[in-house]
Length: 113
Image (cartoon, rainbow, N blue to C red):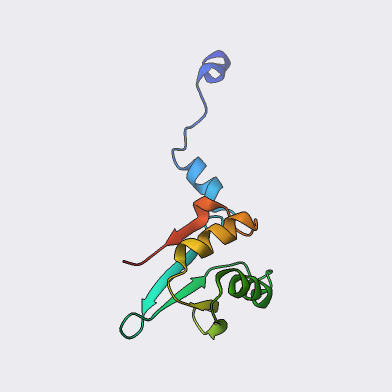
């Protein structure tokens, strides 16, 4: 009997890989870059989902300087800290975050229009 048991493969768990990937909390965290329409042609770009270890004010300062726009960091009870910039800066922000090494390109979601 021991020869047959040695030849049988171990029990196959089809969800083993999925469970292994999800074991790290926040492994699939995305940075969401959205646009909100204000009035007329005015719009607002929001960035949420950055890791808490980053200094939001320093990132905001560089974004404002690079894109010649105003902005602020807003504290939201559900979303945490959110960066707001004037104008449609979605592509600029995504490129900046990748070039600065803050986020990988595949972890950025751009929303709007």
